[in-house]
Length: 459
View 1 (cartoon, rainbow, N blue to C red):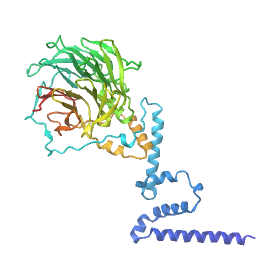
View 2: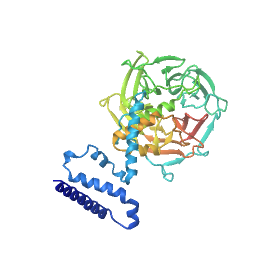
View 3: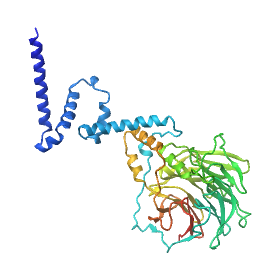
View 4: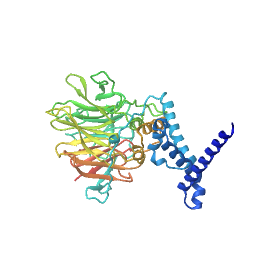
């Protein structure tokens, strides 16, 4: 009675050996290659052949998952290890995100930035050098003037410093800047609303990262939007020439923290990096009406709303969407009120401050850092869930992204066409440019990282 069972078992063994021989033949090649890959290849091809012979309903649920990763065609243990690492990353992301205030969200393929490449030999590229750029007030106290606010009808300019000071200096005069106000926190952007002869007469509106929109002499005029939401990261300011309304950006809902160990400095750069990695679009364009004291939301859903400028007739505003590396055109009035379109993209890096010279028909966009290689890699990582999981793990790590020395700003016309790209690839003259303001044919560059003012001759 046992003989048929034994014969059946033996037949099964013979079939397995025959199948094994066929697999070995298929894998074949020269002897050296067999020795190196034999075991891993047999496992891979035998399993794939076995799966193909089964009913689809009986296939394991992870088969289609593994087939997505065509780049995982590594052999044996190596393949298993790569999949294991990916699963480990995903589990770590879920585990750590439970205790994190900021959660990475999905970023679709067409939402990643489209960076351009600088061609230094192109006639539209101007290299910054001592020939076309001058440096003033190097080593000044207060440090890091993120923005230089040029008074439109006087010879004064204001500096928004890292330590919370607002300083003023006379254009073309070498005497050191003087402190006119101490707003505390981190003032990032500003504009002159009315100018009647210099300090004591100019009305300044400032975007202070943690407080909101300020008016000098220091008075907090807007700390929340009309919908009751708090302004978390006030960034830049532009004043409408027709109505006097104040347009300003609330970059993100990430809270700006103090620099560790400092009572006066705030780490706005770290907060912006968090916003870039997580991929959540919480930036807004707001408008403050000095007549009514009301603040309203103009546009939401911006991936870090940064520099802002307003057209002369207040028909539209231009806003830098930093982590999409583009400039948005937001219609404020007229038939297209409420509509948004892309004004310009393809910049050689992330975009920061923006200003409009309506008289000359020019737009200046600051590019503080070049296109990061890590973002190029990350934007190609698929599937989307894995991309999100990896970014969540990065959010758990201590800050490690350091800006490279690099200086750049781009000049466009009012249609979004590039007129000239100004570059200092080594960052020796101008480094980490965060704002550009034009007056009398000169561009005044602000920098979050440098304790000096760079003035560039545009003409």
